[in-house]
Length: 313
Length: 278
Ligand SMILES: Cc1ncc(C[n+]2csc(CCOP(=O)(O)OP(=O)(O)O)c2C)c(N)n1
Ligand SMILES: [Mg+2]
Image 1 (cartoon, protein in one colour):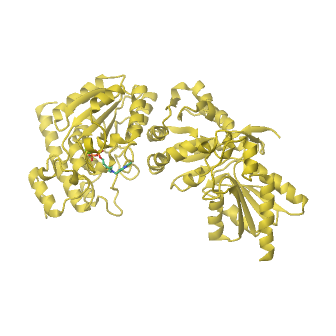
Image 2: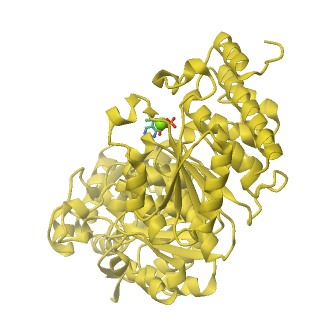
Image 3: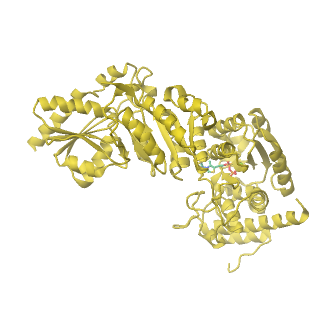
């Protein structure tokens, strides 16, 4: 299967969008080579603002540009965007609901060798807690490209979560991305796996393993964490068991969001695959995904664990 | 600026001070000291310098203003109301449930407020963004901002200072309200050595020192700033916190405490105004 990093898809899509829309401006904090905004910067130097290593200034400057009618895409690593500049995103961007798209790359542990200081495991939780913020986590390159256009057209702040390494392309060009809409990739009756980001393709692999064991599961791509597709959660809950899967802390991210929606609308047994309230460390992305149990096997095992609870209750 | 204009602005500044006191007394909380120290600058900006139209507050060609020291919202609200962006009566609902006049400036709710501020240190960056947009769109509007002297303790101010100079934002004119006080006391005792002139010069700014209550001096400084096309200008406005109300002047305690009705009446009397019905 072809692998492309979502950050690469972002860089390409941003350039393409820049050619079509004059009002797009892009800001970066000395990471444009890594976030791939350099593609846009090279073709549109006038509309690209190098902000230096100053993420707080970058976010509030983006707000100022947006106050004057620009659609500002601000990029850096997820940890610095959502951690260092959290309050600028909250007060200068989300509070006045201006058109700033915080497009952060190098999210999660697949940052790899740079280690725990650079691996954001809490960015989804931080961003989804802010009023007016929309949170999008694409699963592959195709959905990233479509999401970039959709968030440009959306009025208001958006957090787009992107990754460093290549990930399998699961969609073809017919895929339609819509903010707030989950995609059901596989139907099934015993349980539902709701995944986001790079865990979606692993969930599909888990479904295949489980099918061989005679277990039928639904697989959902929850590409928008906020606003959450509550109808999708309700439908998933009809199986009686929901397992979420994310490359993020099990606290406050996709799992938390789905649990909130399920508890309020259609309570069912749930299991959570994610990073277990711990920091990451150095290693290759693959080694880390194994060590932190973000694999098809761990999804499969979690499904079986929850199904066992389901049958004993 | 001719004498007639000067007298007119002085009169508006006086009236503004009275409204600041009234609104704070009604609100029973808020920030008089820093509002009174920057009101002469605000009066000058909104009644002489800035191209703004209360009937068209979103005009893309208008001059912009960012109150980086957002806690001094009563000063901004007052000039906006006197200018006609909303009725003056609204000033008496400051900080009250349901009012458009939030404790700190809210660009969504208040016509004429160009940016939401209140968390110190962010407004200069926002102003930079507006100035960058102006240059990009080849518009000739000017972006004005006021930052606090205590506010410069925020690192982001210096990030933004670098950005403004790097991008040669000649369309940005900033004021530093140098009233020597912040919440916990004198600037010099809390943090740093003052010396803002040298610091901003070292960051590549065009710097002008003035008496921030002298409207004629403010006018000359802004005119000089407009001559500078390739660098942002920082006007270090030497001010008195609480200016105009003797018992509030130079007193750190009047930073964030509203006057009682009795104190408000005394203050208004000192300002040479009246408060009908009180
Ligand atoms: C980020 C942030 N930290 C703390 C505060 C609380 N605060 C409000 S006003 C103030 C002092 C401001 O002093 P200065 O900038 O000198 O303002 P002025 O004297 O003009 O009132 C502080 C610490 C705040 N609003 N924002
Ligand atoms: Mg001060």
